[in-house]
Structures are given as C-alpha cells and as structure tokens.
Length: 75
Image 1 (cartoon, rainbow, N blue to C red):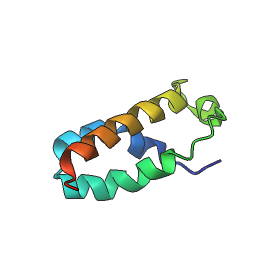
Image 2 (tube, one colour):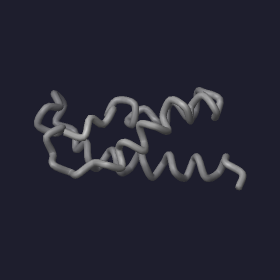
Image 3 (spheres, rainbow, N blue to C red):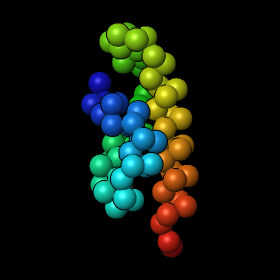
Image 4 (cartoon, rainbow, N blue to C red):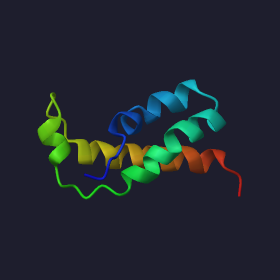
C-alpha cells in the first residue's frame, strides 16, 4: 500500500558493488527513502511468489545502504 519499489531496494547491495556511487545513489537512494515508509502490513509477503519476509529484507537493505552511503558521503 506504500508503493515501495521493493525490487530496487532488494538489489541495493548489488548496485552498490557494480555502479559508481553517484549513479547508484540516484537509482537506489529514492527507493530506500520510500522503503522507510514500510508499515510492516505484510501484504507484500502475501503477494510474493517466494514467500520472502520482505519487511525484514527491506530493513536489512536500508541499514546496508545507510552504512554504504555514510562511508562515501563527505560531510
């Protein structure tokens, strides 16, 4: 219901390894911000053909991305 681009968030680590930071940030950054709106309603789990625990995976990828970004952004 929050229109989170789940597939983009779930490939954050792969994108971080393969793209220059600026491009990765413009691709993944907005999706990560949207993922922070997850209400853990679990509707995504019901729709997932693999029955993945998507709310947990979103949290994990948000944490990864924030650490990755912190290491690259100079304040």
